Length: 352
Ligand code: NAD
Ligand code: TYD
Image (cartoon, rainbow, N blue to C red):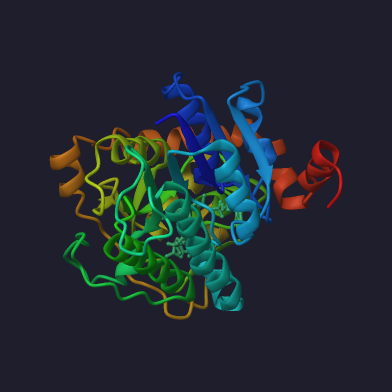
């Protein structure tokens, strides 16, 4: 791995990954970070790598096929890690079309560019020979498997049964990635992880939203009874898992990534209130999310036994560090919620 295209590298997981990869792999020659800077993308997340000459930020859309081809021609990537997506279930319920175009059509745009650039005989539809060592990694989600009852775990062979427009768009993208492997022999991997948490998460998702509201003494909107269960994965463990799959994964395979930390939403909300010394009277049970998945849980036996990755963070340590990060960075939350960071984009790059 020498020249990497990361998409969505100004978002939550992508920016953690960009910082992680530049730190962990000093031999990397180039990391091009393609991001549209939607409401969820924030250049401030990349300040820790701003002096690193290997990192090149490109403001653009994964659906812009001409731009994506130009980047492949210019930088000759050997690796693609595709994070860019519309990622919030609640927004997908309001605006499903955007999720389909960004998450499915955007993925196909990247796959085409990778296939055309990497295939050794691109004019020949039967050619399955690619430059050595290249890999396209699709960052997906456990939500493609649908919901579980009280018991059981998602494995890589669990049938896809997405329930929200978001998870349906991610499942659609996964199927296109699979098809490019089967039909064209493109060297791909798909990773499906559980709910991430950690620094730089936009305060629309459960943990940073509840933290932000609790700090301000605002109500904490818990959907339904709050007994929905998620598996929580610290973002640093996720980054390490992706690097493991890039370096050791068997191409064409899917790997589930979970943190072995199942928690009910209400437990997390109580933990945050307790840590901040705020009263439980701030909890407000609100109308449930339509189609709300009751429980997600991941069997991560494949990646742990075959590739040797394992999560390092306990939930207690991860939450303590995460809460501390948000408490130490009130300006970050303030700027992303006020939209003031867009001024920063104008200052940095001018134009739109
Ligand atoms: P995020 O919403 O924080 O960031 C998404 C990034 O993609 C933003 O920087 C945004 O500007 C960029 N983007 C959106 N549309 C784009 C486009 N058309 N072209 C270029 N860039 C575009 O998301 P996240 O939480 O960091 O998630 C990253 C990936 O991981 C997503 O694919 C998501 O589906 C997946 N995932 C996330 C979680 C989680 O808990 N956050 C769990 C499982 C899987
Ligand atoms: P979220 O962070 O949106 O992630 P996902 O829907 O991808 O799992 O939500 C996590 C859980 O928290 C989910 O069960 C919905 C619930 N939730 C609330 O109860 N209230 C909220 O305001 C939000 C944003 C989420």
